[in-house]
Amino acid sequence: MTTLIWVVVVLVLAGSVLAMAESSLSRMTRVRALALESEGRRNAALLVKLETDPPRYLNAVYLAVMFVQNGSAILIAILAQEYFGNLGVTLASVGFTIAYFVVCEAMAKTFGILHSDRAALALAPVVYYLGRALSLPTRALIGLANILLPGKGLKQGPFVSEEDIRTMAEVGHEEGSIEPHERELIHSIFTFGDTVVREVMVPRPDIVAVEIGQPLHAVQDVMLERGFSRIPVYRDWTTAKAWSTRRTSCARCTTARTTCRSPR
Image 1: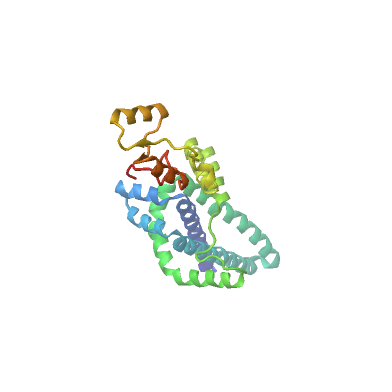
Image 2: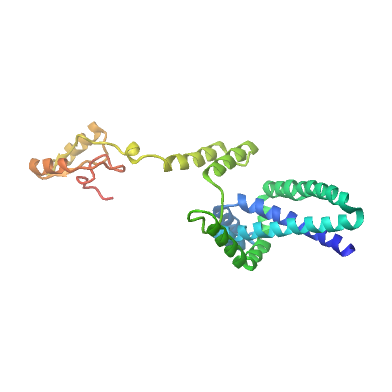
């Protein structure tokens, strides 16, 4: 029985390490990992590999967490049954659940969030080899889940949604880890993705153009007067009218795309 107690202790410590790895890697980005690598930090190159393919390694961490949680809970139940009987199993299970939450979920994950860089660098080798060892089981289990669920499912497993990222941005801003302009940038990315094209296109019903034979100072006067940095050039009025009938709006140029003679 003493051996089982030590196994439970080891599993709880492993659960704390996995929880810390999960929280720190979830907050880590590939850009930040590259920055740490440029600083010459230890295990930074390995961290870049993890952030290049996060589903593979995070899924392995999730699977290992399930093994650790369930395994330690079962061993606690066996020990409680041996020492305290049926009532002891219930009391021990409740007490162990509370203790596991405090140690592994609250303390370990909080440390991983507060010291994400240090925790991610320290645990990068553990997650890397764990991901390689559990690669096939995680893929098989995700494939099984996709078969059981209706629809196509997710090839690499469930991950954060748009609302989750927005919430993390708000929490990071409240904690001081994300600046106000960074929070606005995150929100604007999703807002831009929902924008209809016609809302950002600039319609040009009238074209300001100059004839090809106009002197340079006359062209400059027209550009200064109308406030355009680029204007179309035409050879004769007939050609200019033909251009105007098939013009399309250009988001980069102030003139019609089919009439703009400036290099792109």
